[in-house]
Image (cartoon, rainbow, N blue to C red; front, top):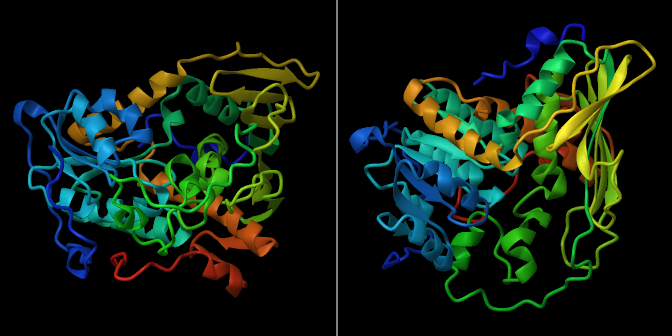
Length: 434
């Protein structure tokens, strides 16, 4: 591949709470002074798990070797589950109070997407090491602010985003093959994730929040809305208030690998078509979507279907790299190379442990805190991939091609699209200025 190897990233790169305070203006003033976390006894890190269920379950094993001193979740039932594994931790339902605990060194943030930027910036401004699940933020503006906060504090902290494929043997090997020109010059890359969801007509009535859920805290900076089961647990991903749909939720894993393998970090433009048509429910993000990203020297597409699981080239999800010598197809389970009739040394099909990458990725973050290395998918990397997927969603929402200025991190010549780079917050929530 011409002019891309130099920019490619190296694989070595960087009892419940008794009283829950209501969301008040006093708690929303973020600290300005940085604080380095206190050293834990026996060289163990003092870790807080913020968001204690769902994605957090994958972190129970990796952090079990440390001192888990705080558990935080807006759902008390979730704290009870985590407390069975970490019985000595203090309990919180408000992450702001959790981050006031004096002995913290690091946090694992597994909250909903729309609070990622709040938790991450607050923690970094307190000098804490931060592992944040993907995507890094719920808007381009938030991702940029998280990055700026990281850069201000990077001499004191380590950060990692939950893009675990950086820890998977398959993806490391494929990135090397692409950069080494194994399938020739690449002109097109395709990524996809298709499935048939189990409840295509799920339309629950509005009702009361679960008894142990602190719903106002769960909403956080999002608009006040009546509780609806579809807006809670896993399905919150399909509402613009809280997330960016399948494109941002799943697309970020594959686009991250495409950025890595192709040696790029931002598209020049994006366009998108799709709809929420196949699924009869009250969700908002498209159940069928195609995004076309334009990069220097190649084009890249992302597509997903939520009501038809027919695979692409035999893969329910995956990536296809189309080169002048051959095509490389892959998913988490392995890869294969199809020759274009030329004589090329074909590498063996890859394989690897899907579950192990979650453990290895979190363990790498903890190791980097101790060694002062830069984690393999830090916030500097994560903010670029997050922004690309949000750009694709903006193109979908305005129904036209949008042009991206990488240096200024803004959309060129389209005021309506620029309005969607950020989002408004429910008072008194606000993010800090760097």
